[in-house]
Amino acid sequence: AFYVTAQLYAQMNNLEKAIEAIKKAETFAPNWSETTVNAGKILLQSGDPKAAEVKFKESITESPDLVKGYANLGALYLSQGKYEDAKK
Image 1 (cartoon, rainbow, N blue to C red):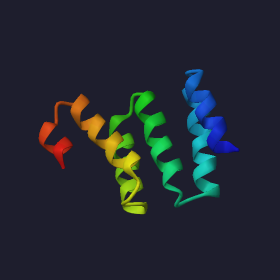
Image 2: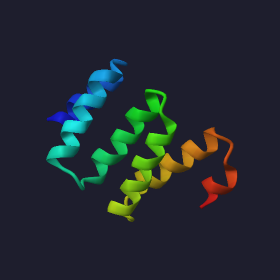
Image 3: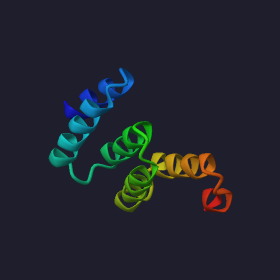
Image 4: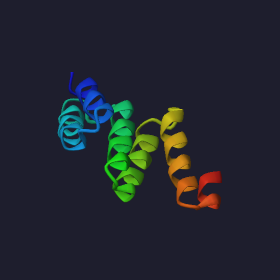
């Protein structure tokens, strides 16, 4: 429930509530990579690219087969002009 709530708050651009909800979702599902990726996306949307990078990397560690972690990390690197990092 918190995962979906976080997504809804993020879509409404209520990022404070989105961050609160995603933290609760991570508490209930600490190693669920979808939640970790979503946390990264919300943190990025809230203007914290360093924290988002950490979450994307965590999701890759949790689930190396989940493409979303790589895709979001690569997109972050591209947006920062880190083209060599994005290739990895």
